[in-house]
Each structure stands twice: as structure tokens, then as C-alpha cells.
Image: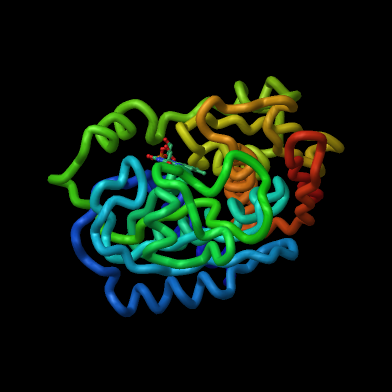
Length: 282
Ligand SMILES: Cc1cc2nc3c(=O)[nH]c(=O)nc-3n(C[C@H](O)[C@H](O)[C@H](O)COP(=O)(O)O)c2cc1C
């Protein structure tokens, strides 16, 4: 994948992606599905990671609390559940989500999927299969083995079916993002940063996060050659226990913002106390 040559594709995807919770009862067309599968099985990541994006079919019954009528096609993001794995799965998953957006496919990250339903449609829990009814997501914290961290529907927006949650999020949450200066740990005068870093940070701040909490913070050092992204130490969301996944998603946007400008860097996600710290060295 040549990101520089496809700058417009990725820029449009970052700027137009939004969460969609009402879908037409329509499978993804064959040509697009083939492209999605090819991409999903060969995502170009700047680090090693064991994970899986698994396509599955819904039968139209609810698979998440805000997804009463899923479209026929869905996808699960699976990996181990330690903080670094979750962060890396967020990174890989978001690259897939943006690629799908570029192909005019609607998506929505769902962390609060109905575990029993996902297991029924896509058996994956093996010896842990006795999921209690009413359980959303795989667990509150780190657990043994590979799990579905999140799912997404893949389909076409049903405008007429716009449910309250979609309406609320498009009015209150979608596209509402904190300005860059509120997200900086240093460099409060953002305008003094090099243009290419501002461009990539702008991609990063537009990333989606559970409940739109945007708990990522940016730090720039070494003459703008080292950039770190992490949530504040000790941060916990009252309802979403995997905020390091959101930070991985944000790190993906930042990396993409550099890649489309032809800027190479090394990317190191490391465990730093109770969080994952993403270090980018240009
Ligand atoms: C990791 C993650 C988990 C999410 N889980 C849910 C969920 O369980 N239910 C839901 O309705 N939305 C979920 N969302 C969607 C967010 O609410 C949405 O991304 C955020 O409000 C920003 O809106 P936008 O995606 O339209 O820009 C999740 C988003 C992320 C990134």
C-alpha cells in the first residue's frame, strides 16, 4: 500500500468516517467484500502483532446494545487482552475501518457487544464458552487467551432508520473533537510546531473513541522528532474499561497522518505503568 499516492483516499476517510448504528438489510457487494478481505489479511503495520480480523454473518438479531438490527456482514477484532495487545489491535482495526470507509462502507466500533450472541454467530470462546447472559464485551480486564475485543457491522447506512442513538451521536458526539491545544501535554502554542506534525496530530485528534471520551494526550520533544501519545496515568472511564484501545486507534491516525506525507518513523507501543505509551521517532 503506497500511502503517499493515496493521500486523498485516507484523508477523506479520516474526515468522513462516523459511527453508524442503523443499516440497510443488504450484504456488502462481492467486489467490495473481496477488497476488504484482501486488506484485512495483509494490513501493513509498523510493528509485530498477533491478532485476527474475523468476518462473520449476522442473522439480523441484536448483537450490541445500540445495534438492534445489524446488517448481514460484521467483523470481529480478536487478540490477547493485555494492554499492549489491545492497543495494537485498536491500531490495526482502525486502519481497516478507515479502509472500509474509503470504499463507502459504514462501520461502528462496538466494545459493548453481546458476548453470547457473538459466540452464537461466531464460536470462538472454546473452553470459556459459557458466557453469562447479559454480558457486554469479553471481560472487565485482562483475561486468558484470545478474545473478541470489539466488533463492527459492515454495511450501508439506513438513513430512514436513524435511531435516537445515531441522532444523538451525530448531534452531540460525532465530529465533536477537542481542539489540539487542549490535548497537548507541552507545546501549548501549537502554531509553533512544524506543519507536517500539526497535520498528523490533526488526523490523531479526529480518531473515534468509546463514548467519544478522547482521552489521548500528545507530547512533542527533541525538536519535534519524538512524539508520544498516551492516556493520562491513572485514567479510568466509568463504563469503558479498555481505553488503551482508543489510544491505539488514535496512534493509528497519527501514523497515517505521517505516512500520507511520506514521513517515515519507528513506532514503539510500550507498557508504562497502567497505560500504553506510543512513541514515534522520526
Ligand atoms: C473502542 C470503541 C468502542 C466503542 N463502543 C461502542 C459501543 O459499545 N456502543 C456504541 O454505541 N458506540 C461505541 N463506540 C462508538 C463511539 O461512541 C463513537 O466512535 C464516538 O462517539 C465518536 O463518534 P464518531 O465515531 O461518529 O466520530 C465505540 C468506539 C470505540 C472507538
